[in-house]
Amino acid sequence: MAHIIALAGKGGTGKTTTAGLLVRLLVEQKAGPVLAVDADPNSNLGETLGVPDGPTVGGILDQVAAHADKIPGGMSKDRYIEYQVQTAVKEAEGFDCLTMGKPEGPGCYCYVNNVLRGVVERLIGDYRWVIIDNEAGLEHLSRRTTRRCDTLLVIASDTPVALRAAQRISVLADELKIKTGRKVLLVNAAAGDIRPERLAGLRDLYAGRIPYDEAVERSGAAGGSIWDLPSSSPAYLAVRTFVEGLIRK
Ligand SMILES: Nc1ncnc2c1ncn2[C@@H]1O[C@H](COP(=O)(O)OP(=O)(O)OP(=O)(O)O)[C@@H](O)[C@H]1O
Ligand SMILES: [Mg+2]
Image (cartoon, rainbow, N blue to C red; front, side, top):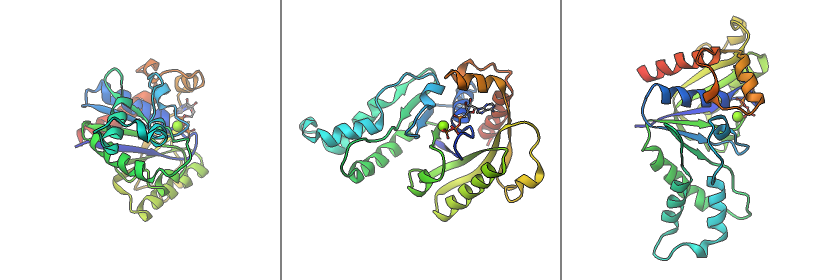
């Protein structure tokens, strides 16, 4: 069974960086097949992971909606979408990557979205680990794009605002009855230990901190790849400890 890790958090807290590090570490630890899903329409997980741009699921849905007549004879629409989405899965070194993008065209996507859910569910079955990098905020929860995950990984910076947002995400996930195996908070880019009063109400979630890391900041600013970070870098080491815990479970 795939273990699905969905990332969530306020804007700019380090979701994509952490998602990239998770993918790298799962690959390096040979933890089984990994699928990286970039579910942020303003996507950059692919870039972080050094995967070249390619077709997105949103683009495919646009094509299917615009050219329903082009579906090869004898093939059902569902089967056609499934086939197209399979071709959008990019094979990288040691992992696969799927970019959701977003449909641009007018019209109703309810039908294709429903089909898509089934396709993605089946696709996920081929992997041991699925890392889903989401857009900032609560939208993906309230729109139920994130419907099920084994680990809801909330990323916050060490600021009262980001930590309050993390708490809201956790409460909302419960209210919306999103099926989460467990919810976990990592405080990212922390300059030092987190002040205990800041974690009031977050004790059950808090799983550790990822230190502020100059190399990560430089790489982020330069649009660099997560694979180029030295394995002595503090953020890398913190995520490694987290991943080792995940694999042991
Ligand atoms: N531990 C860290 N130390 C230093 N800089 C960091 C750290 N984590 C992330 N950054 C930097 O912070 C910036 C934002 O990180 P990232 O893009 O991962 O955040 P995000 O939550 O995915 O943002 P968005 O909400 O826009 O998707 C990037 O430039 C990244 O390099
Ligand atoms: Mg991001």
